[in-house]
Image (tube, rainbow, N blue to C red; front, side, top):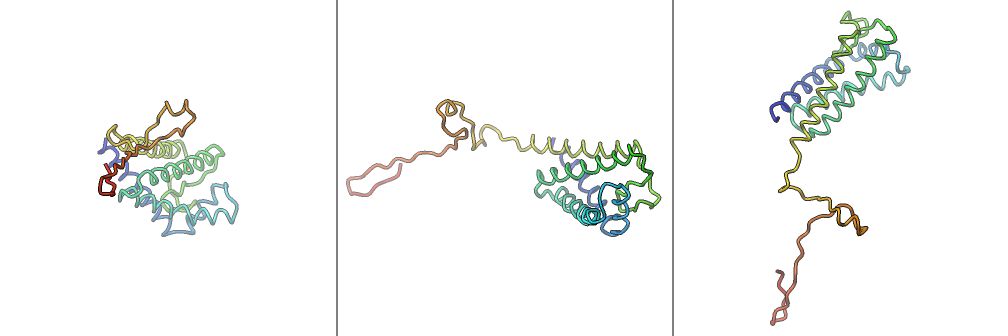
Amino acid sequence: MKLALLGIRFFLGALLLYSGLGEIRHPFDFLASVQAYQLTGPVSGIVVSAMVPWLEVVVGVCLIAGLFIRGAFAGAILLTCLFCFAITSAWTRGLGISCGCFGGGADAGGDLIGAATVLRSVALLGSAAAGTALCRADDAPSPARISLSVCPSRIRRGANFFSFHVPKTRVRPQSSGKATVL
């Protein structure tokens, strides 16, 4: 399971890093690509084309480096959902544009949006979701590591739903007047 998680992390991280760096290197081409989707206005298109490549780079670096893995997978799911929506929307509206996924503009001569592009974006979303599921399964606490436990008997009494285990200390007075902690 750890090997599969590592593979998904490196695959998605490298893909997002490569895509983001290509878009950062050619910002005006990427802006033209974003505007070709006809989903944003002129100002919001500039904001999207300025933010998405940097988000891709940050998420890609985090996935490759193993930093904030759960957050990086959440970012990857968010980005791939955005890509799935935009690509599917353009395909269903019959826009004959290039996806612009790796820094090429809308007229860069890349592959046009079609069923293969939609399936590719859905596969990326699936791999991000699988990575999240593997990450959560890998981090599942064993019974020996649980520090926060649900106590159903406290629900009936109206107490707090979650209970923390804190060992109680008892103080025993000594004859010399000093107290010792047991």
